[in-house]
Amino acid sequence: MRDQFTFKQKPTGLFKWFLGMPRWIFRLRLGSMFGHRFVLLEHYGRKSGAIYQTPLEVVVRDGDTYTVCSGTGPRADWYLNLKARPAHGLWVGSRLHRVEQRFLPDEEAGQALADYEVAHPKAAKRLEEAMGVGYEDIGVPRIEAAQAIPMIEFELAD
Image (cartoon, rainbow, N blue to C red):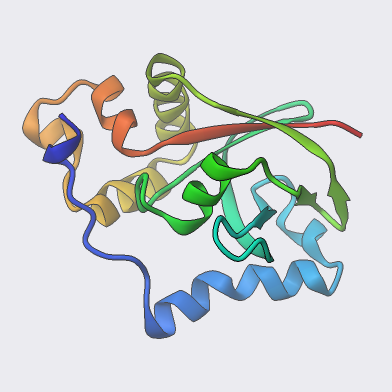
């Protein structure tokens, strides 16, 4: 079923620059202005070993546990980097935390997607548009849609 979901493309140009803006806000130690809606992931390059930073929207927050998704699918560089090596850390507000990461199974990812749609309907619609298709349009169950939008849970370890 994953083949039914086609991602338009990875962000480029001005749009990529705009998506990266939160990175600079976090670097200025002003990440608290995002509340708990955005975090900054620090991860290792799977080939270079260098540390990269990727701003991510939080899909679900439960105490010290943050769930994020790969809105551009399982081929996003940061997601592939996490598959190769665990995250270096997660910036929440103005503080870098060590984290334990867990890739959500499809059933949990489907439920997280449902919770996200209820909490943030406009953003959920934009996510579906970025994928190029909404799962309601093609009759695909939410769990199969979640397979195309991998989700990772980070629990703060400190």
